[in-house]
Length: 363
Image (cartoon, rainbow, N blue to C red; front, side):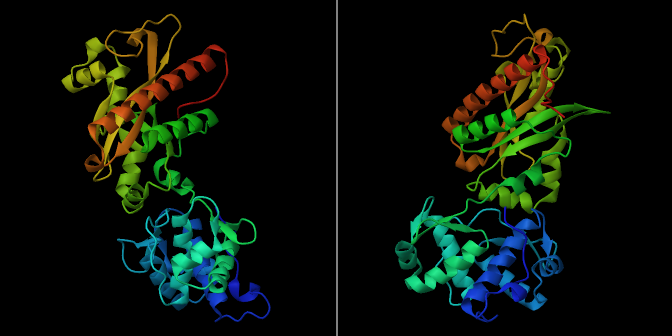
């Protein structure tokens, strides 16, 4: 997302001292940038100190400011380790009295007033600072890659990239497909929820693995919960088929209907979807199967999927949402979007197979 962190003591412009407001703003923002670059897991004070090339006491002091501004969360493993929140705070904070707090406040307000270019005068008024002081902070924010100038008196915040979230969710067994990523993004836009693509893997036992995910800056609660729960990360990446809704729909469509002795799976087969608690506390998962139709197969009357003898289930597509935030109508909207995308995935896979195109869609 950002360029490599540089040594601030050796790269400050001539005439700017290490204790000037511009230099302090630049250093706190470089610590924030390093926190993101070091990955989605917990980052220790020692790692941050090494990456930023600053005294440990300085980094610790800046991390207190960064956490108070909402850009970091303390690790449950103990003091001196933090998670990057991966998303800017949803609401602007009044700029504090310290230089670091003001710099972070300007950054938060810039995100809040966007998207798109934000006039310097509007930003200054929101932060209750003069144009000249706000502009000094904006230069530091721009130098660290958090914003771009748009003309002489306008700035635009760089959109927070959720790529680091995929490192928490996606199995290392996954292979990239540009078409799959595009369809996932379209489903995310239609549902407004985190969308996950799962594949069936058959080793000693049958597993479902997450091969792709689509999150946005609006998924802050999900990202924060996931980043602070390593067990949930592991479970969402790889799990047995009976662990959640994604695995259940794969199980329900994996074998002929006559061989299903689990009535729950029979019901899932009849409905064509499954819903269960997600493997992250406070979240539910809704999933539909992805099947690759075979030429000549016929549609069933029960559900818009091919019969077992004329198709092969290869995975599942799911959304996760917080039950207290999701109405029945919203879940139904998600189900329609999932079925549309899953059917397209299956048809794409069948087309590539019939045309002899070797593109892997599953692990």
